[in-house]
Length: 361
Image: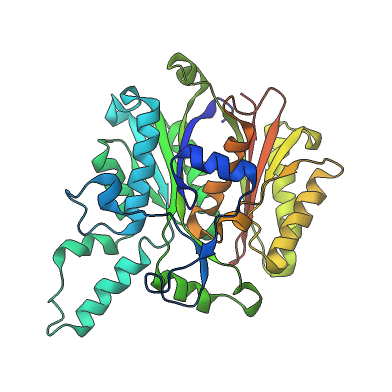
């Protein structure tokens, strides 16, 4: 695992399209959550973090985008920016490039709109067939591969707020299994009225004041030697990923602390080498447990904390992917330095915890 690195990244976020707006926003600590236009985004939330002036037609052109849902458009745009930054050489052997994308349920808006049309139409089959592909979870992953000519393994991963970390872990296994030469990996989520209502009803009272956000973060995962040969200086070495489950909310702190300790041990990293910590931190008791767990594992170390959710809102499936991007943004253009490490953590409401340890390449 230690031979694989993150050598390039890009993002589509409420700060704007591309990595630079995200870097500027994260490093300055500027909040991207704002008052929502109630005509465009009716629902239970009055504030949210949405990508400004974003549409599929604007960033991908009108051809083939009439029925493209927002999540798919965000993901395809993010991968397009990443490939453009790396140069066409990164996909010149498309059969050797894998694509792994984390998502929640696909486009909740697309799924529910299609279902509604089948119930309210004169006949159940009087629906727009062109919109049916938007009802499946792997729509964004498939479209990203098709539009960018990628023909290697194509995988969709879903795991709640830990989705970004799970997608990264799966990407590592794909490469270790010899299924690809490099992996385009990331996570995406959309803001929609239907997602807003589902989140609202699924939360406890204490969490309903956390606004929603949207966005995508995508990365190029490849061997360090390949990155250097292509002129891409490795930004961070992927040292370890680790996941655990806990039975009750009160056990989250102990589970995550054990998870972090195990990942640091696997990575061969001491607590005082951890320069950056990017927690999920969605508020409430679980966020407090998360911070305390990291403190338990790191002891007296005093890293810099990157609280992404406080700036972007609850980006759900994209959250831990955006946390990884925040680490790379904060590390600068040269990435983590020798002897430096970063920790990305998450506590999912449904009883899982996870983390990743990144190191200087």
